[in-house]
Length: 351
Image (cartoon, one colour):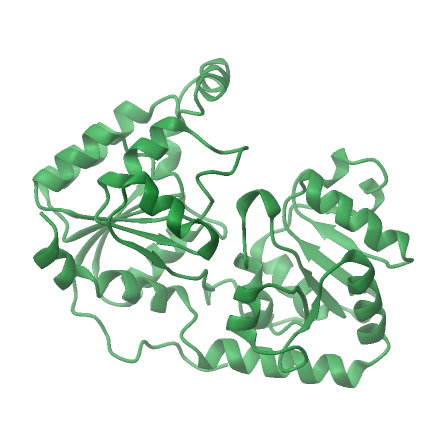
């Protein structure tokens, strides 16, 4: 593992970030990266848009998936940026800013970028207020090639592909490896949904063991005994490093070609069995170079069984993937640089 440093450091800037704090939230990863790069950083916790009673939050979500305190939070962010204008404001995910706030910020000369971490057209997340806000940004960064044209049809003038990255605070080899008897045979980390549950059932049906770390797995019949619950970043590092095979599934409803775990598994030092997608092959090369690929649950079970029986191949793949991730431009420090380096062109090309 080597120290992270962008090839050419960006000039220090004043950057505002709207995102969620703590855990493995990407907004917090960008905050940490910006601070490490020497930028002046102000962070607005997007949880502020959700302040309200449980009843009010439920009603607001059901009637438009609109955060209950969105207007107040947006006004707070805009007012703070009026007092101390940043060079750049980056929002993550749904952004938590109204059209009015974004217009006010642009009129003040603040350049606006959204890192669209979830697909805004995901049926489980789609919200009219968020879709209406997106064309107000100077640039949209999306980690999925599948929705680039959707952003353009929506009226977004500058849309760029930017993969997920890894946060070196959380995605690095653990200091204290798990005891051998506690190591999972196959580990999957991520929240449950119907598509993933169907895949895992078919995988288990081929006689494969699996440990499921993440939320909601206990809600699916037949999978409760495999559910390991939500784990801390440190616990995930230990489990990922120790697991014989780390299964990496994309999310159909999100139109993913890769996910956050795609980068994190290799950064931690795990052996990865990844869903065969164009984005995964772009990141990790052909089958067997640094990861093994699968197309179906049956294929995944066969490949996992072979890897479990071959410790030398697992070690080779894990080492190759770890080297590829850490020697490439894949940290959130590099993602932050890619965003901030656009400022000169945004200043000349947008109003």
